[in-house]
Image (tube, rainbow, N blue to C red; front, side, top):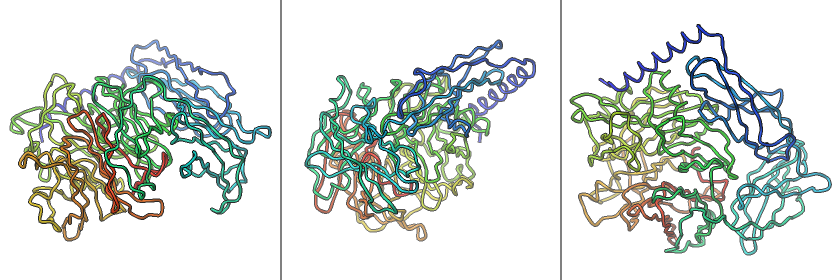
Length: 617
């Protein structure tokens, strides 16, 4: 298939690489780099340190920086891949020890590198005089709990509560002879909490630390958090998933990502340490989250970041660095990563990228067309698999680019919800608009294509697949609908299709744009499907009326308590006229509905700040 723009990009990359190789041969110079920390060594466990690199090179070229951290004398792990920013706040050590921080400076023109490193000592907070200690963090709703070592092989967690509420628990940590340190999160502002360390041996409680109290501070002034209004209070069964994590966006505000209880009270927020704007994509098990930074014309300034519940960056790459790896593998460069960024069950990282090209004079009238590329990185943030929606083995027949966006959507440069466009293009057909991707129980990838009104099953095979499309679900797809007499049972312009309970169940948020355009007065729906991939039958189990027209954004989630019992279904109407959103949860014994005065890309209903229900990963 003719892909003129992509071919030009690959040719340009090849030319740049050739010039770099010539330059590397003709010069023996390497970047000279130094590294300095914002604080001297030693520092208490949990202290963030900002590291700044300074590099010079007698050869011309842009200098990129990558940072690695690890125990002194041990293996260093890449924590931020090559980018233009010369400073980095490393993840704070949560146990005592001596650690090495290394920066690699790379001249992009010559390919030559130079390194520098520093060591820093983390000293324990808990000691025989203070066997249990609390330390403030940058977030006034998160505190660091420190305790003396416990016997190796045993485990420990922290239980915390305020008067009149059930206790919350941190994740369990394994004792290893060093002090134990936990981020405690999920607390309301200006509220007193009691915190107790709990020791376990073979999974049975074997002892406790002394109980300490902590009073959280007020929220900082000027924090951009929308007002929440309870439209229908949660029934008692909702107590097993009492936290909502919201990914707010739009409205001209630099909203912070926010956690609330089911009464709308703020219990957590994320404010990036470097002021980066963007949005949260997924909550991960253990108190970790993925974040996509604001779009920028410079892809190296588009961060892709995992952070913890205290707001510390764990690892980070950027679209520019991903593009280097994609182009070396023969794929076109992305203009952004959008909609999806998550960790899969094996630790690999799955994301959706967008790019645009003129695919041919007879394809969508020769227009510039936005299409999607799936990207999988390993835990070290290096490319291991990719999928191109134009060039995959059977895409030409199963996803023909002549099948334009169902409602004719287009994107202009700078338009909300759209990727940047490749110059000189200023408008493009938004052909697919991939908005979610998930590793399926059988090792395939489930992908939602909003503007095709389709879900795809892609042959990923846990990283060894062909990339062929195995089926398409939706109107004019490969499945027959059962279990309903609804004249328009299929979803359209859907969001957040997710396999639940390890299949065969699937939740989907049916925005319903196509259906509503044909049937004015109808509303968006929350759907639960039972999918039989042998008979190719999709049985509609629940088709819940959201009561609003949610033109874009959305979440679909099966609610499962800590015992593995399904308690309900959660759906997020992500935008009502792009000014508000509604989190709705449906239970057998009641209905919960909370309105927020901002659009929300997604919302996750969670057991606590560490434990989203994620059926597969």
